[in-house]
Image (cartoon, rainbow, N blue to C red; front, side, top):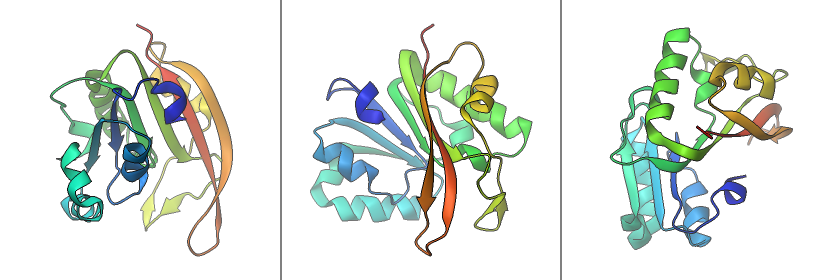
Length: 173
């Protein structure tokens, strides 16, 4: 989904909640040159940075909470792999939306992966909120237009199936 909207290899991409995930590796492998990874865990960011070796120097690493991110420059693509569904209060969701609005340039895209309506109601001992594309659209409001969505069954390392919603929105204005 990122590749479909990050049309140029110079697209500025942030992976929110990226931690130690392999997405940053894949983006660098595909030739993207302006990549940021944000996560609340400095330790998780350190794992990814160490894994990348010298390539990690090409990534901007941001330790911080997605609800309060203030980026030095706006991005073309905001990718959220399973952060948003952990925000279970209106206050937290609106703080996240404020960060998103400040970070994403007009014309940019948001790619969000959350637990689907049939997904679990708890993860890692924490309550979560579940979404489909309509519920995400309602929350993001009219300044974000749904481009694409899909439901997918994700298999956990333990073999359990979890329903996820993947959605792409554009901020046209």
